Length: 369
Image (cartoon, rainbow, N blue to C red):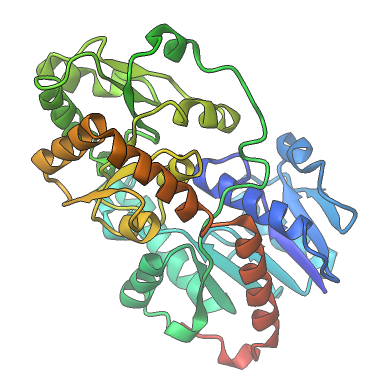
């Protein structure tokens, strides 16, 4: 069997983590499979440790470009693949290679205001529908995403496989110095937010809850990835200064060292297809505090505190509990490590390989959405 994996997004955020986890897991399996991994030239070294059954091929067309619509199908045809796996619903318009596609979320379809433009929203809606029709199977990263695909795209249940996200096999192996901003904190306790600053992350609510927390607990800090500039106005309005520390954009290898000392990850997002930061925190033994939105309860289970979406008082009280109740914090830390083992690269690889086999057994005339 000859399977292609479109890994051109391997350096991009959550999809990149997904690809590294999947390829790392497949690399450790003893399957009679030849893999062809398509990469941008700048990412070739990131897959240098893959075994002899993996061949790396440069694709000069970047993701989301018009060029990929012409170059990628030709490249796939030249490789004579039995199957190609795309990690996103933006796939080539044409091509005869049997395909599976992973859908991580429907955020642009459900929240059009988050799209860069109405044209982008229309394009994403059209691409999603086209990929859902063409793919032999759809892989969803959570049960919640699967339900969204069924409800909003009209894909039948039997055409979707849930393959939960995982962390790469070597995610915690690299020990790197903590960012300088954390060193300056000394031993000050801190809550942590990891992620971008887009509107659906609900960071205004987080900052408001934290500002109220400070009236009852002195000396605690909130550490956030990303830049201060995007939140500067709300910080000034709330009178928050040195109490909130920004780390900028961090490489993945530094994250374990940022997570481990934290009291908890606070992640009050309105919508997530999966939510990698809670999983990363749990893998480090750090309890997550999340909203009850979308897939977050599915990922966290009983390993963290789940609060009603948009409830500032509940969020503040959850943070106070973690701060003031060390026994609760220790109990959740143990549950977090156990919960993280449910989302393992080995399981992701096994379930994805099963989906590859099922996709190849599908009769082409039964492929429809």
